[in-house]
Image 1: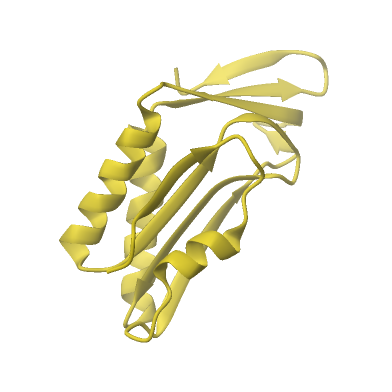
Image 2 (image 1 turned 45 degrees about the vertical axis):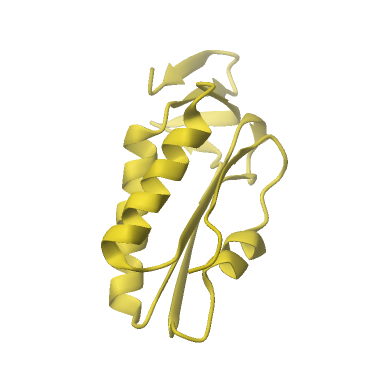
Length: 137
């Protein structure tokens, strides 16, 4: 398997980075998930998001990626953005390659769910009316 890509980044994300990290001649399916900042949540207009993380967040992300890769014998990669993000910016990119699409979709969904629930990253939503709220604290 190739080198594991599991990073927290303050820079804009590029889906090609995770795609390249998992793609190869052994696999006929590559699933790339992109989490995009949307313009609404719970019926309210969202103007921006702010992500902050624990100093060990990248270690948690790396551990999850390594566990999923090892358990499934598949290449996985993930990069999560932190800082201030505008509507339309990419917040998370995760990828899995597998011989067949069903397995790639299943493992990528597991990867995204584990990242969301286990990596200590917190989101502050800024609404168009000037109010903000923290999610995931």
